[in-house]
Length: 177
Image (cartoon, rainbow, N blue to C red; front, side, top):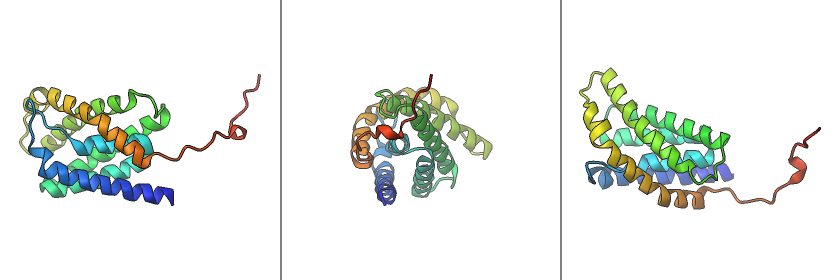
């Protein structure tokens, strides 16, 4: 029941983020960069909820983005599914509560998402300009996404964080030797 409620909350947050991204934030350019609210939100959700949840949320967000921008259907879905899965794995295998985890996640996937978009559009035969995407706008986009990480992480952690249960010592594996 808790998982269903979290899935509905995450779906609503991602839908709202796609609407805000497509209508308002997508046309805002600061220092030649554009913040990506959907990407930051997805990565925070994946970090807190895990790989499968992140992959499904990534596909949902990518599908909504592709339909909102009327772009090539599947490009954003594929990239956000991969990003959600791998950041979910990062959250599962390292401490989710580490202070640097959301920032590392956003920094790495922001760059990989831009590079992946370039590669996929090139493979599809669409015109791409690598200099504009990776050199001209990347530093500003990376900085804006990192600035967005703090409020988005605080919001999502408050909405989707599991209830803290008392630690049950009987479930721990005893150290022998």
